[in-house]
Length: 210
Length: 210
Image (cartoon, rainbow over all chains, first blue to last red; front, side, top):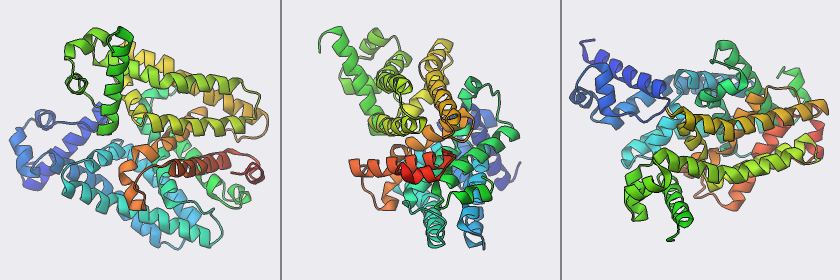
């Protein structure tokens, strides 16, 4: 990991691991430097400051999810299928990076307008656009009820990360960890509830096997 | 506010206001003391430590919501009506205390087992019980599909606080603040989606005016 890109990648990976272990997006330069076994100055050299490092992590984690989003929008599929695929992908994105919503929230709060502005351009606006397009398609084809895109955005992203955000409460329900089976069951319920509630013709819910 | 109960109330109120203003549950003893114009020692005198203060806030904010929950469980109403009333009450609870989910999350992470244990006894377990009872009633009466209570817990609580948690993204949707009208519209969508997706006979969705 001597070359510059490898070191960047290593420091980003270290910071993600700390966020996952702490179950928080609150991570300090000195924590990252200590775990990476390097000086805080090296982190500063590669990323400018903590915000620069966190933004690089956000871009890395979000790039894959957003690329999938764009592909999905262009696919020749009914809106209901696109939304089903999206929810499943979103839950998996939160599984890989359970701190994602909290990191986005934290970055938007930044006093540095360039930092918060970038989060809007890179994340919030494309996601908002996706829900707008999907809803317009679904309403036009008579599949979806007409609800505000903002509501669908909040309901889908709010429900999708809870299995990981609330992982410290799972034991109340007799579950010790989030296995693939636990995740699949959750995706099935979230998809079933949201698509079932959004469809105009609820009989279709049965036909498309919610 | 010289007497002891008033001072406790005043310090709790100050801490809530800081959490709302910072849009975060991360608040330090010195921030609270500074804004309250008292010494950190006074906060320690009344609450022992920061955890004690945060726990007192959680109990204050949660007491009302949990009292309503117990009344609701005992009402002679169909499960679908109970869930509708619950969602509306929950969104209002998050409006009053937008930091509630994050504070619960933070307190559960506490290394002090007595603190995290109390959060389970006072919040998580009664809520889990509520979803279990409501679902059992709704499934027994043939109204609800049979989904795991944990899933309904996560979907309802995850979706209900997003209007406030994501208030810093509202401008993307042309909304400048959460008015009563904005809140009512959101409650209507969350209720419509979740009840619509949970009902076995989706025709009932129209009859009960989702």
